[in-house]
Image (tube, rainbow, N blue to C red):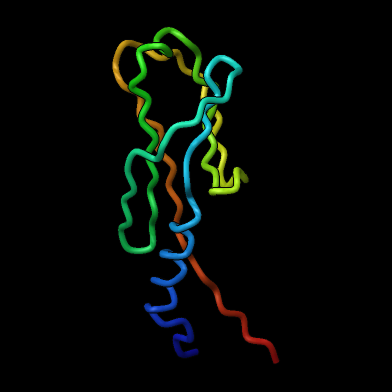
Length: 106
């Protein structure tokens, strides 16, 4: 079977998926706190989003999870965590691999 999906189509899928992420909500000791997306790395068909917690006010608090949200406040991805924030920054990473599959319909 010949390759039906061309590399450009995969690039479009990666770019489109990346464009929907707006911010993160981090569960800090039961309270949802909004954080910006600190960094995005796109490598091939992979998208990595990073959220950085450097706040001194969350030192010693429990980080229970993080969610990536779109600009309308809808959840796009969740990640459960259970760590205590120390006096250093804390980086939360999300990685997405974009794959498309073609199925022949006869």
